[in-house]
Length: 412
Ligand code: AMP
Ligand code: MG
Image (cartoon, rainbow, N blue to C red; front, side, top):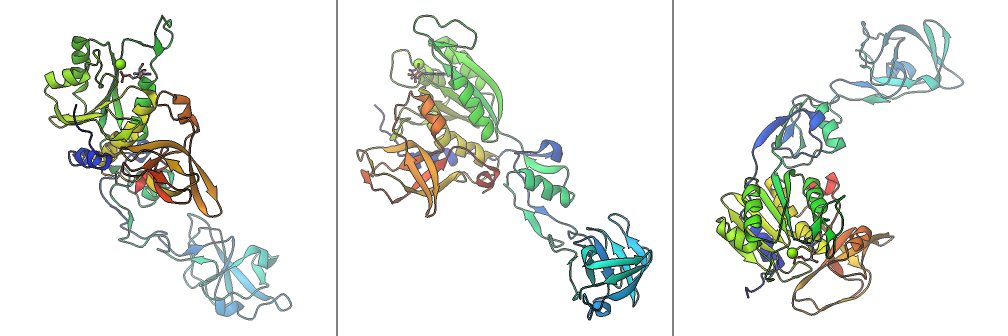
């Protein structure tokens, strides 16, 4: 039997075969979750003009330098600056211009006095009860974004704040990477779809739901979800159709059983094996190869194995294909309880994360069977223990792989 490859080497083999997808223009309304293809650079400053941080009066600070509750300073109101409607005239000595939050600071003004710090004693006269130094409650042009600043780097995932930032600099449509396409094939005679009766020996096909979801969460476009019976011709047909996509993910049928036909079918279809079997638990019988530019992943069928191997091998490839950093969902945490294993293959244990005053602590879950899909429901991450580790003590810092990817983790 083929010698198992180490997890890190497997990732390197995969990532070295990744080709970044092409660039397309997408309106910001449709760009949530996409990755930027180029740096987003602001042509003009934001905010574009000096403006008020408060509702109040634009003043000359010199005029109100001596103002106090006991000795308010009277100013003549000569105009108004509303949001979107700047004042028409400049501010002279002894004058005030009513101003709204975000409205342009009138020429001649260098400070804003909040409306709460004033009394209006007639239509065109305001009494200022506090002193204001130059710059008080003024937001200067370019404070947020300077002209020429890089607001987002290529590869960033577009979440809510990113879309807002792009809108702010007028980068709509955005230049983003095409989503990698993924074709999913599940295999197994025992699998039945929703609504079909569960005959003797049958189980429901859960991978047909987990795999497309994982692919979409990783930024891919799922172009097909197919099923193949445990039969060489059926497997070959389904895989033949799937090979049109950038990435094929097939679950089940990659092991050594007499009814495992995936490897044979891939071989006949001209897919070249890069590795089969990884020194990993769960997920040992993982197969990876290519046909032309298509990356092909044969993942073991057990519902947990399929998720773990997707997260460790397929997700980084999809992220890299869209121009992101494949290690984005990786980070570290302190181990909560000592973990023991033989020093032979790596473990990717389902685990829970807890935020403590000392930082994040990771607790591997007790239910470890690769068929126990519900154990994934309680998991936040995979706790990673390298092949050569045997006893990893509570308190040690270990590597974890986050299950959920906020745009923050993906953005890296
Ligand atoms: P295999 O990798 O085909 O040997 O399958 C390993 C185990 O995973 C068996 O118990 C299968 O019934 C189960 N399995 C395979 N594919 C699926 C699937 N799509 N959904 C749920 N369980 C599956
Ligand atoms: Mg099977």
